[in-house]
Image (tube, rainbow, N blue to C red):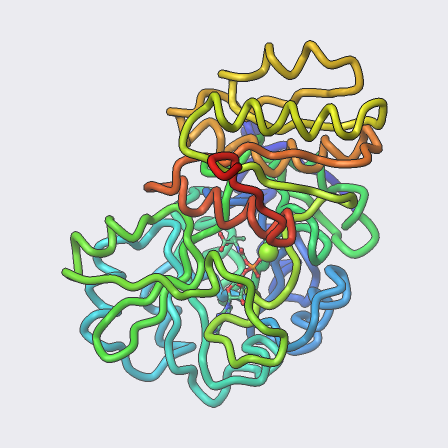
Length: 353
Ligand code: TXA
Ligand code: MG
C-alpha cells in the first residue's frame, strides 16, 4: 500500500486518475471527503463491496453510501426521484447530505444490506469529486475506520488499521467538517433525519418547511426492533475503554460533576475530553490527562477534533474517559449523537443531585 500526499502535488490529476482506475478495477482506496475519510470501492462490483465489509469487520446488514460526482451517476442507481428529495438535492448537493432512495434492480444487494433502498451522496470535496469522475463509476464508501472505532479524520489515525486491505491512501490533511454526513429519508413528504451531520435539521426545515428527527438519534434502541438506519444499532465511535458523558446546563455544574468522578477514581488514570473552559480545573488532578476539543462556541473546531481525540484518549490506557457535553444545537446535535454513542449511552446529568 502507498500513501500519497495531495496537498501541494503538481501531479494531483495523474494520481487521481490512477486511483480512479484502481477503484474501477476492484481495489480499495482511502480518499478525503469534506466530512471524514472514505474507504472507497466500486459500488457496482459485489466483490469489491465485500472487501470493504471484510476490511472494516462490518456487519453485512449495515448498508453503504454510494458517492456520485453528478446527476448522470444518480440515474445509474435510482429509478425515480420524489419532489422533496429533488428539493433536498438542489439545496444541499454537492455537500454533506446523504439521501435514501429506492434502488434500481441492478444495484448489488451487498451495497444496500439486502434492502431495496440505497443511500446516496454527492460530496463537495474537490479531490473526491475528481476521483469519482476518473473512476467513472459510483463509489461505495463508509467512513475509513474499523467498524465501531471513531471515523478517520486524518490518515495517521487509520493507516495501521487499514493498511493491509487498502492499496492507496489519498492524504489531504485533516477533514474539514470532521463528522459524517447527515442521513435523511423522506416519508410522506417529511424528511426524517436518521443521522445528524454537517447539514442541520434547521437547514433542512428552511428548505422543505418541516423535518423530523428519528428517535434512534439519542435513544438506545432495542437490538431486535426494526430500524430505519441499520447503522444506529451498533456501538460506534468508541474508544477501547469505559466512557461516560457528563451532560448539564452550566459549565460549573459539569465541572463539579467531572471532578467528583475524577476523585472517585483516584489514583486510576482518567482522560477528560472537554472544551477549553474547564481545562485548568481538571489539570489540577495528577491522575488526569486533559484533551481539549477547542472553544465550546466553535462547533466547527470541536467537530474537527472530536474523533482524533477519542482515538488519542485510548493511547493513555485510561480506566475511564469522561466527556463533557456540548449544546444540542446546530452541528452540536451531530456532536452529541456521536458522543452519546461513543459512551454506549452512559450519560450522567450534572444538574441532578
Ligand atoms: O460523511 C459520510 O457519510 C461518510 C463519508 C465517507 O462520505 N460516510 C459514512 O459512511 O459515514 P458509513 O458507512 O460510516 O455510514 C453510513 C450510514 C450508516 O449509519 C448506515 O446505516 C446508513 O448510512 N445507511 C446506508 N444505507 C442506508 C439505507 N439504504 N437505508 C438507511 N440507512 C442507510
Ligand atoms: Mg462509519
